[in-house]
Length: 452
Image 1: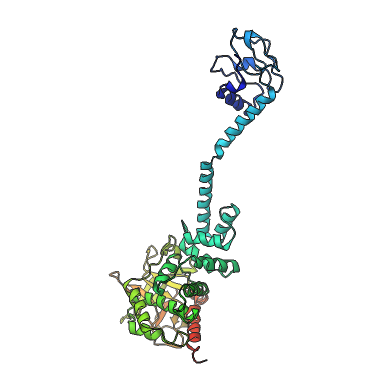
Image 2 (image 1 turned 90 degrees about the vertical axis):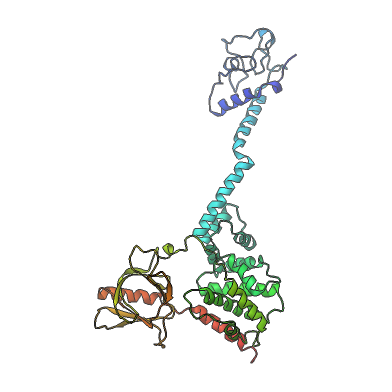
């Protein structure tokens, strides 16, 4: 009985392959586990015909060996063309096959999945830092298709994504981003939901950005989708748009502790008269929406990185200023001021994590003033309405947050130069909020439809 190459122990093939792929010019001197002979004694050259070296000692009669150029039965060298010999080409093929198997060990499906998951995780991190760069990274690594539908699905699932970053991306005015926004909204199913229920679902899937134009595009897309899912509820998407904003503002008024004058259902109904293409919406509908918001406020998604620490990380300006208190006794108090995100924050100490007061700068003006007791003064005020209280809030000593009672904020800087710098920076930060102007224009449009 003669053994063939198929019966050669696989470990011998693998050992030979490892030595060959390691770049050795001579074969290994590993022992054959089957017979105990030395592989180095019996394999001549890996590229030649495989003649045995002169010093090779033959096996005892009857001990077969299956490599080319080794001793066959009776201690004689097996002829290259005999049935007992493995041709050099066959050996090379076997070695190549084993080598390929070894290389493929690192390319199993499990390893591929692990690598893919790592890249997806990296793409999510990049998205949370810069949405556009994150999307680009995922597309370039074939983890996401460059279609608005695929990107919308990725954002809709939202796994590991910062919801503020989702809102920023969806609110961009690029044509492709707008297509993604509409594809994203299409993934929401609003059929048979009242407007508050639909808004709860929509506003939980991302965080509304602060920019008025972005909010406008997103709420316009929402209104179109809601009317598409619920035909006949409103006369037009403009009605749905205006009422959606009215509900969002109602939510703020009812549940923000800084707002003391809580609107009633009657006031909410009166505020929304004439918005249904010039006609009124059913009072029962408006009352139900009011009660829904009153009983359960919107849940706004919170993200890491949106806390006060992030807010004050890169301010427009900061420093010590004196602020004239607004109580009965007019005293000057030294406060650490930080100007950022169109707001002026002031702290009692630089190490405080929470501000003592916040002054939103929308629709305010600033001017230099003279003061008999303090130099380098300026004031924040509401133009054309000197008796109106500025919308602001402060924290009392007992921890309560209350509305501010200033009609003007008078502030003193340490030097004339610092006064000029503060005035310059605050002027740059002050902006008229276009959101209210935009909403007023839309409301005027739907209210005047009936007259035309």
